[in-house]
Length: 201
Image (cartoon, rainbow, N blue to C red):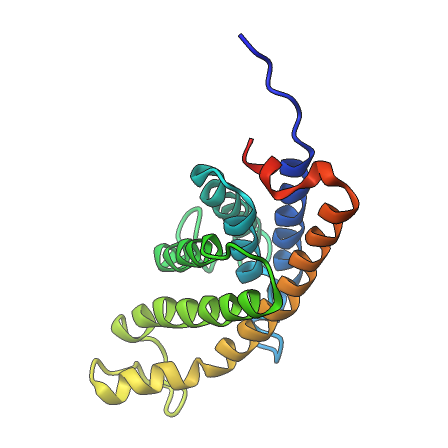
């Protein structure tokens, strides 16, 4: 039986993902500030989807980091907000995040244009998927403080009032993706043992 060698590339990619989770926790208190949704969560999903070649790693590690940060936030910052371990409607957030990872897997050649395109797609996917249940289950209509109606007006209002969150996530995706992808590409050039092919082993 062969002994699998330690893979430094895997360790570095995991370090980036854990850093992103830590930054998300640090930013959690900004929910109602202009920095709401300005977190590295989108970049974390894209990054993991791109650099892990084994499918289970692409999803398990980023989703695991998301879960880890969620549990910490729900028991420290948002105490009493959720029901049990996670918050209500968590399934939609995780579905959106899985789609973001999927978008990351489509990046075959890391360059500015592909990363920025992926950052846009990730922000749009998160906006569409996570705000649909807000509308359907009667989230708050900020115009009048009432529940959103299950009609076209309520649907449009739901997505319109979520535009600031979409904007912040888009900017965060671009900024953090530039940092994560740029740093790892630089590390790969400086240290050949960190080549993207090594991550799959």
